[in-house]
Length: 307
View (tube, one colour):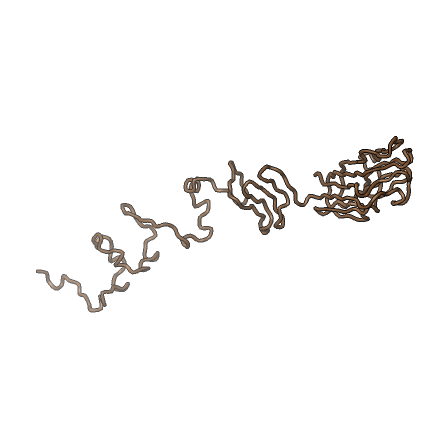
């Protein structure tokens, strides 16, 4: 039988209400050899009772089963996972593809998207829009250039104009007299324009942007006397003067000179010319005499930006 001196004395303050405090257990007094397997379970430990301050810097988990839970919001702070924290190829292996760097990258295949838009940062009303078989370039909420399902291009704001004359017969006297180049400013043109085209002096067309323009002018001509006095040079002038050819010369198109009948067929002229923004072009024929006349209601003045 053991004697009294072989036992430690346990005071009444050692255990209070089934709770052990830090002062009741000396440092390193309880080690793994003194705790039977499965003696302490998760239900025996209050939430938060074991924190990093109560664990050694190195924990041996060999032979133990570690159960992981999915990573949820709040587990990782902003920028917590960087390239240095991931093994080479880890992102590709887990995602199944190589991510595209938003700061700039090169793709080796196609970028596929459903109906929608690629928009400019800070401007949601401008970008490239995909809708069914139609692709369009949108600016300020309006489709400026688009291709329909048959591949036909349409430019909604392309500079262009069309004008038809008004009234009946007009002689050279209607524009200041014969034997001179005269602007057709008394024609009473009815204009239809788009793309920033502006008009002035009833015949001048000012272009809003630089480029090559196709210009066209035609009329219906009658020669009263069947003589050379009823001829005309039909012309489109640049900035109020002739010399619109690249060499500075004036196209010398002559109609109804020595005509044997009264009606001169094919009174028309057209050309393509590079115009700077702000330049204007105007119908400016030459009247050889006051016996030739043209008809306002059968006159056409039109053009558009080629590119």
